[in-house]
Image: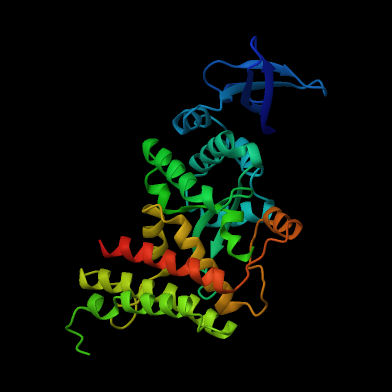
Length: 183
Length: 148
């Protein structure tokens, strides 16, 4: 089993200033899955997990490096964090992008924009031809004003991290932005 | 029209988009049927124009005359140019207007968590003048990109 947790905490500094920290933890039972520095966490169930702490400032490239050695099972479980079984099944039928790249992207997006809820994955099919069109990564709580800026940031990071080809397969959707004309 | 003329010149949608914009600002669009047709036509005017540019440059695809292009290729080019906002706005509303009768409505979404969120927060696609105004702006942005 794999999981991703986002922890946020604040501390009051001398002088009254408050510092807020955010940490993303990817957990897996497969200790060999991780490269770099890791720590062990004893869960309340007594299972020992190997965890990797990833700074919220980490680049997408960092996530790609971390994900590189995960097993297929771990990748599937991580993707189920963002998609239900039906969506995952459809994704596996088509395989429009590499699952490793997609999981890394979703983890990075969650680490950067997950404060207002995790991203969700959907597949878009044309209703006339039934042909797959593109993947939607939906940010539920972001609005119209943020949308273009977030697209630029995410796609810019994808290009810098060697995922330029994938930018044409993935669409970033701020759900409230898309439906704002209704308000 | 001669098939030897530039298809892109013939299908350039500047005039059409400006016409819709003028109708929107003049307040002359009065019913949902008109709004639906304009939303759909804005999307297809851009798709036709994009395909015509490709054809003029020598691209050949499907059909007896190899002049039928896929939506997917069009969408991929727009996403590569980071036009996610404009594509989603035009394509989502074009699907809603052409294929769904209710207004507001929710189009097919496979991830049930997204449907749950939309239902909880009553986020639906409302086909109205506000959507058409945004669609005109989106169409102008896409036209500028595919014309370069």
